[in-house]
Image 1 (spheres, rainbow, N blue to C red):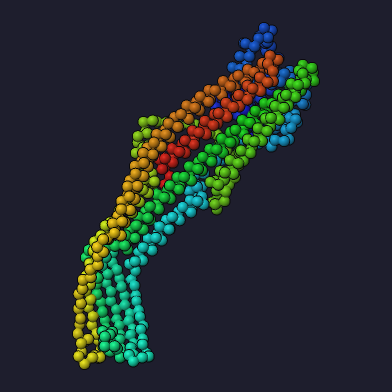
Image 2 (image 1 turned 45 degrees about the horizontal axis):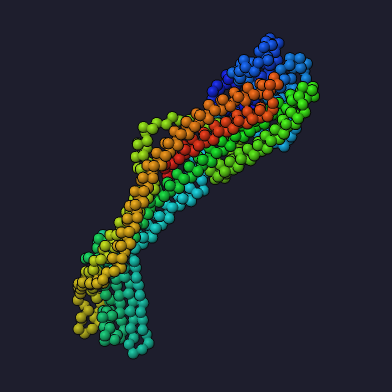
Length: 564
């Protein structure tokens, strides 16, 4: 375990790479050991010690972390002064920081793993897998399937087999009648035809004008078929509703996919924000550690009369200021952890607060092949769920247009009915005993047909809107792909520039610290250089964050996430 700090990195670890705050700690430890051994074996020449040119540049090129003057004294190190860290023990250094920081108890220092095993690090794919399996809003979005299925079942109800029955009795009055009937009705999707049939019994003393209600003693069996000849033959309201519901069920898939893409993108952004917040916390801790490490040496120099007391007070003020920065960085890191937990859940769906030791570093940046852009545009157009949704809405609109066009036709239905009474005749004429076959045509047409025409006008306008939306969406998808490519390329270049800037800032900060050690600079200049180095490190984090957010946008615009 090491306390994460920032500053110059050991040249043998990661030369010319982006800042890793934990490397500063290793430099301090190694410098403490090497300073004692090297002081006795190598003494700088007088002209070399008095020059801020060769000596300082030599130290800067070696990228060694400067220590207070007392740390370089072989006599004090050899005498076993307990106030100074004489070994490479990280715990001793941390205890030294706690004892010598004037307000170190105010900062809850995060202790980070120097090298977290890869298998213990939280990876983006784990967050994405959690979204797929347990994210509540995705489970809610998947209910869109069931809703669409329910609409289809509801529309299919128009073709249910229907049973009918009636009991109509008139026991009091001059005419006393008793009628019972039972029947069925079945409509078919093909050509809008329907069949019907049933059985009825009519007994009693009927009105002369209602003698058709009377049957023979055994009752009457009846069956028939109804066939539309013009209106409602190719399409009718029942079939239109069913077809729309079927399309709605298909449309549920791209709707759910759109939600999934949004959730994965949001989860990815929260993940990278969490990684970036941890990196910035390490930078803030490293900046604080530099001031804390320097404070004891300044204190001893003040006590020895080599420095004025305001120098110590200024460094203590600097420690307080940097402790406040660490506290703010800790708050932002915890806030990022909580936000990430909304998307990172266990198998029961409960949010997981990621452990600090699970936080990985930013992975290497992928190379961007601009030649793939045209292929990616075509891929995005083929897989984008929004375009699929619009196409399905156009098909639903076409169903409505067909129905409205059919309503312009007159209603002309052909009906054929056959009936047969059974049992003892109730009339001396026996007029109900023979089989009866009846055929009929029914015509109904509104002359103005304004309802159908108005509906067609509405649907034509809706179709034009969908066409415009489809074209705009296609153009926007192509533009989004190009914009993401441009962002990835620009972010990659920004990262490269930020790394170069941070390398220069670290060298300048190292030079300024060495000049301060040989009393050729002041604490204000050191603070400025260290602050600039920390800001340069933060810029690396910000540019990398932008790059990986652009990668999340790239994944989203290509619609790479599919509904499980």
